[in-house]
Image 1 (spheres, rainbow, N blue to C red):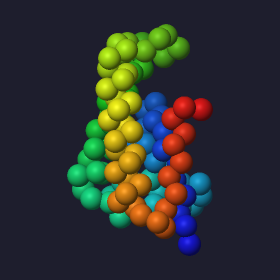
Image 2 (cartoon, rainbow, N blue to C red):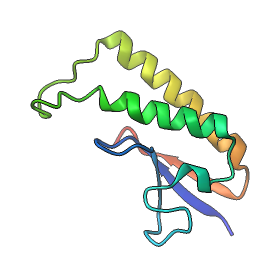
Image 3 (cartoon, helix red, strand yellow):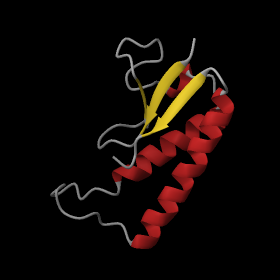
Image 4 (cartoon, rainbow, N blue to C red):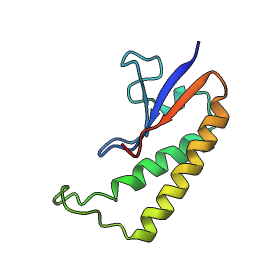
Length: 102
């Protein structure tokens, strides 16, 4: 059996992983501690989700992001690295789709 997850960041949500099945044993969105990944990766994914929240102008969310181009690039690079680590740690029994870009 292959487990399927979607990887993306969402306003007001503290994790970037969503199972296809809303009744998933891993929660919806995923509860990171339920996944077979290291505590270090759990912490990194939570850190990235928290950091993502600062990309939103919470006074008026439709406004452009307060992030500079450099911060966006740094965030994207770190999210890419975390996604690679996630796929590596989960292994062959998992498919993680990157849905950050549409």
